[in-house]
Length: 288
Image (cartoon, rainbow, N blue to C red; front, side):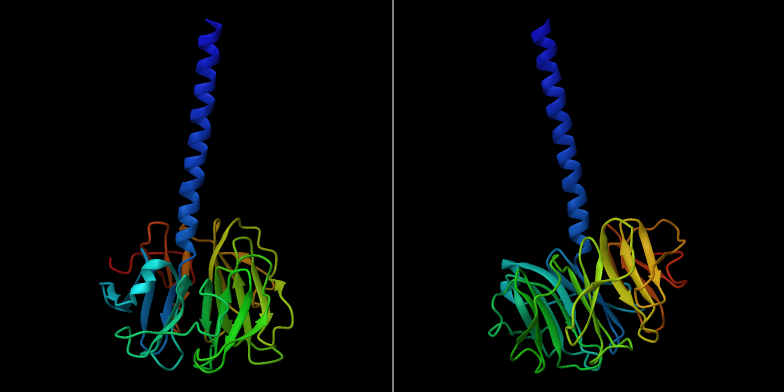
């Protein structure tokens, strides 16, 4: 009888460990989805999203996501970022691990790889300068942050970057920089900030909200910054020096972007697109 009880206890404990492991995997997968970029194209008034290693676009009022053709070698890696220059909606930049940085100047019809001067193709984040269409920033895993000032033809290492893995990089033209603007680096644990002269990284204000997924800022008022976290949406009116939780409807977003008109767009953990017209207090499906 004692052996039967002992055997039953071992099976019960093993089942519990398996359940915990599966629960952790599910959470990790949801978080991994949140690392993918939801990007708003200001000039073309389009949304871009990455899902299942594919790139999709739709207009503000459109109801259908249309796939953009991608280079064949994208299937060999993980597509993580898409970015569009401020004044040129036909040019697209994509990046990811084992993909490097690639550019299309005809909205995805043809692609050119731009990784020749980079130390590897392990790119975890990419962004285009807010005002300078040919200035790009790419984060290379376990190496640092590289800048190109000629649309990706040549690259120069600028900084080793934060010690934490950078999942999302955003350039802002917020005032107060010693050069042309600021870079926000989103990691799992925090949002960090540096002038684009790369004069040192510092955490933004205290953000006790669990895992950090994504961020966006107002183009008309760059000091207004939004962050999507495990505990909901947070907002700052000081460029990230202080944060306040948004009193919302409980919606959890894993990707975030903002249109010039102030419309917030986000993806939930199912990858569904949501929209807010009241600074994140309530969210609705744009197709409804």
